[in-house]
Image (tube, rainbow, N blue to C red; front, top):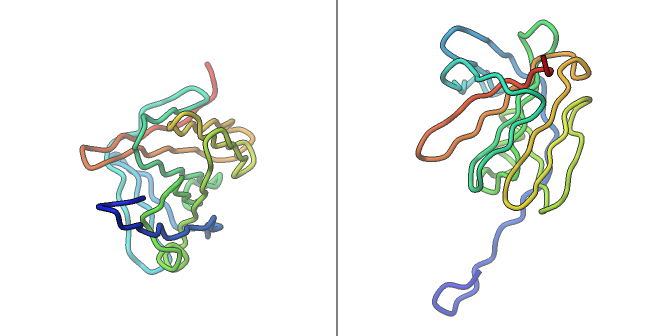
Length: 151
């Protein structure tokens, strides 16, 4: 990137494997406790989405997959270029960086694809053996989804 003739170096970000984190599902939303003791609260009851969620361009996408007890899970940031590696490692949150057109199965039954500036999360909750949540946000607001099997 060049601003006024000066080249700015973009800092590289790496894929980071997530740790298992404490999760609480309640009537107001989803709470995830980081390894460092802080918590993040995703507000609202997640909207049901059959098989996949496709986020609009320029949105932050976080994927949470719980274990069968729904008290633990793994949280993954998708294409996050803002959070430093050390912070993610301290919190236990993972990250995956995908180039346009790339896809990766990040957990059994959960695939993330980057296509045309949109992130798509596809999941088979039965294979994942837990619940699969997708949080899509930007400075204007946030939306929560739970991927469910087709009915």
